[in-house]
Image (cartoon, rainbow, N blue to C red):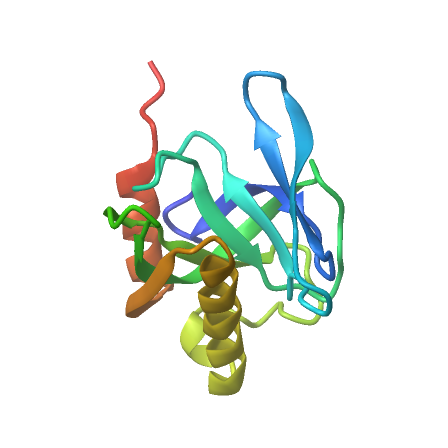
Length: 167
């Protein structure tokens, strides 16, 4: 991670337009089909994680990659962090925990080359992304409570807090 430019590396789990969710297994070093979404519901952009991080749910930090392209599970993308949704999720058992969602753009993007902060995104797009995560969580019988929308700087602070220190 590069603090000056908010650059991060993201590994894609589920591609844009996919009606099913993949999940990376560190134990087997493979991507596995995790679930099918209801008919008509698809991921609005590539969805993945930041390696060597851990979030409040015990998994690596989640990232939605806002891009003009769709890739594939396992694709490694150098991205620029532009923002985050600071989120509290509640499990079906009633346990509350943090499960933030980060927003990034590929460094090589042509269409989003001038996007450096989530505040530059159309408000309607961030509302749609929030609605996607709310509905997606509901499918797993989890509550999704948006605590705050953060820009690039606030998002990077959360990533740094979730980074696993390498010895």
